[in-house]
Amino acid sequence: MWVGPASGAPAGAKVYSSLQGVPWASLAAGTLVQVAAGTYAGPVTITSQGTASAPIEIQAANAATPPLVTSAFDFQGAAHVRLKGFVVEGSPWGAVVLRRGSHHITVQGNSLRRSYMGVDVSDGAGEALNIEGNVIEDNQTHGLSVAQITTPTAVPSRISANTIRRNGHHGVELRSSRWVVEHNIVSDHGSGIGGATGIHLFSASPTEDSGDDNLIRYNFSFANRDRILHWDGNGIQADQWCDRNVIAYNVVWANDGAGIALFDASSNEVYGNTAHDNAQDTARPASASGEITLSKAASTATNRTTLNKVYNNTLSVKRSGATALTVDNAAAAGNNTLGPNLYAPHPFGTAVLRKGTQYAKTTKEVNSVTGLSGNAVEALSWRDASNPLGHGLALSRAPSKAGLKPTPPDMLGVWPAAGLRYFGAYYTPR
Picture 1 (cartoon, rainbow, N blue to C red):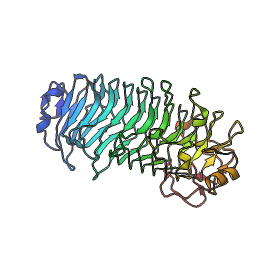
Picture 2: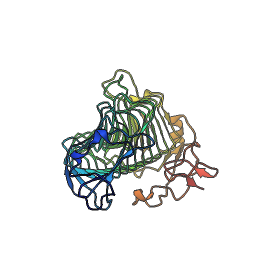
Picture 3: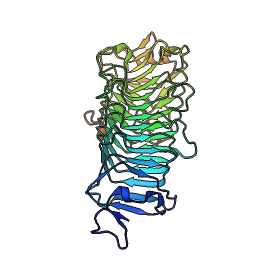
Picture 4: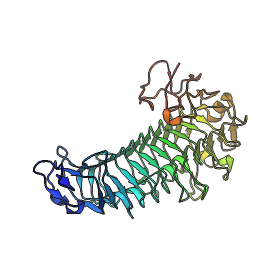
């Protein structure tokens, strides 16, 4: 099926003059909708129902000349549909909206820009939503927002291999559970709204089923800002009541706040990450800043920042007065496992670890404060610290300690094996 000018249409195809003219509700499973280059008014409401073996494909007829949709693609009750190769801008809602039971939807290879939001997953969206390989940029609020508060449990959804940049608030706002967020490049958020973070896990209450059991891995998150409220600007944050998440093999650098922050969050596992030169906002206290931070909300009577495991991370703090791993006074009382981790020596010769009122500068002191052996404080040799996106924050020289042997591959797909070192996002050969 061809939408647009008849020239070049497949033999026997029906031709429609606009996307609104396509009978979306009655398209047969397996239908291919090819859209010619041009500008099309939106919103376009997709209610089509494909099947697992015969999905409905909606795609640009020529990938070199993507169609422009001026408003939104709005998926309502759709199933087994793939949207590929469009430019969508100017929507007063999300450029792509997934809602009302839509499931098994793939949004792939689109440019979603200059709208209120890039992708909006909400209002009863279903399972198996895949948002992959898109460029999501310059939107007023979030690049991608998932407010799928009651999360389907059968098939997880994925946010993968997207470039998400320069959006006004969070890059990814994940108010949901059991999602996989991987291989994304997330940067330069918080230009318009305070309290922004690159990848933000959120729950509105302790009883809400959101912000839990997510897998955040293999992402780059950098240059995220909060120069308005001076609270956040983190690379990745598990916010209040966000529990049992795995945050692993991410590379985070040059953020205003922490590279990775756990705030009033419990039972999260943070391992194999590389965090370098974060805590860049000098308007907030250095004593509360770091590459990885654990802190307690003043609004909660009990300390929820407990049972977190923070290990096998490579941490390199540059800011004067900040420690690489910072656990505030209240969170220090929680039963958190802090190590083993690899620390670069502080460039100002001060402590690399703070746990409440305890500070540690050397390997011996870190082991003493954490109660764990296997930590290391030693000079690090980056492959090319000026090129993190080119994996320049991998180490060119193996550290003296090995770290705990993990099971998954690292950022470059290297599996754990004999002779490797396991600190940071990259396994380091001897």
